[in-house]
Figure (spheres, rainbow, N blue to C red):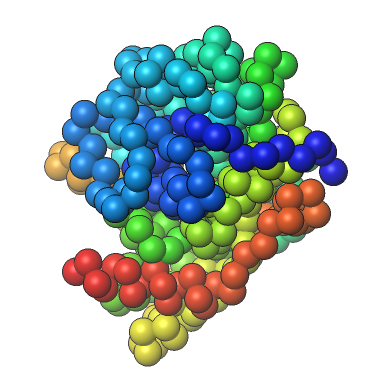
Amino acid sequence: MGERHALPEVAAVTGGTGFIGAHVVRLLVEAGVRVRVLALESDKAELLDGLDVEIVRGDLETGQGFDELLDGADGLFHLAAIYALYLKDPDLMFRVNVEGTRKLLEAAAAHPVKRVVYTSSIAAVGSRVGRTPADESCVFDPAGIDEVYVLSKAESERVALAAAKDIDLVAVNPSFPVGPGDINPTPTGRLVHDVARGRLPVRISGGLNLVDVRDVAQGHLLAYERGRRGERYLLSGTNMTLDDFMERTCAVVGRSAPRLRVPDAAVHGAAACLGAAARLTGISPMLTPASARYTVGKYLFFTNQKAREELGFTCRAPEETLRDAISWFTERA
């Protein structure tokens, strides 16, 4: 176990208007921390409505607002990143997720920031063969991966952990977070919503690790308080096959899970069509050829043993997570 740290008096948060970030901000405010959030000029920040937080308008890509965000802040939670399956300008992910992280951490080193929690992803963690869960020791291997988000987060984490030599930084790697407040929604949230509404009428092979966004948010605060400098912690939940995921999701809404199974080759063919449609319409699809190659037939299973043992991380049952996520989507419909 590492040295214990008190939560900051003033916390700077990037990505605080987003899915995970808004939950982190809420927990910080409830803990009595003064919170300052970096947000784009166009961001309505509706997930922060009713919270006593300061909004600083800025941009991770350009570095605008960094000094105002960090001035007087003794803690930094860096969650901002672009998470999308398709962008017309895919290089934007590298400019924001990688170079934006580099610029922000350089700025933090020049301010009185005592500690940083950097939000990475299980995308930056190497996988294991078959259904064996991966852990923090699994090194990311880019060979055969062309999914831009995955590549950008792996490189961003490399930049962040390298910065730990100059600034006290801990990384956390959420798996596939689900729950209330998925306003965009994320690709995982969209999958939950579509399965619950019967919009995905077939079964496909593979597996994922589902974790509640509220538990992930709590894991960020635990990492600040208890994480070891330069370490990363997997904030993962329950491993389940996609069959199990569909059964559990459909059970929440009283719907029968699909019976028809399609072969992986057919899924890859559909992904190619969806990718072509996205290039024509600019609308992000449920699946792209690159994301299909990364996920279909793969069991993206992870263990949170290190986070449990060193941080005291806990996670709730997936049934509660799925129920609350679906209720939130339903209320917004």
